[in-house]
Length: 129
Image 1 (cartoon, rainbow, N blue to C red):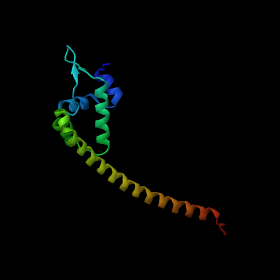
Image 2: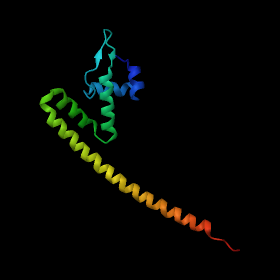
Image 3: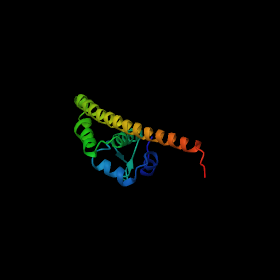
Image 4: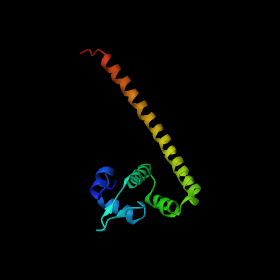
């Protein structure tokens, strides 16, 4: 199955300039072209974009994604250990960030519980004038 640029925009939520940029930088590999030099995307390209978006959403800079794709992935099976290590290091960063976010959430929940207690106490008081 092949997809046009417009299809790809709809399926990924990325703009055409972003898709072209990712391709130009080598971050989105293996994009084919038709006889009119129009890009033809496929399901593998969609999966790559989803992977890129997951890495970006979890804080991986484009320069590291490019390193992963251009300097490791495209070299084939000889770089599997290297790629695994890159993903493992990123996973550790994501987990540390999640842990920190969870601590912040606990503080927010604690403050909300205090407000709930204060509001409940105020609502139960009878005001005498």
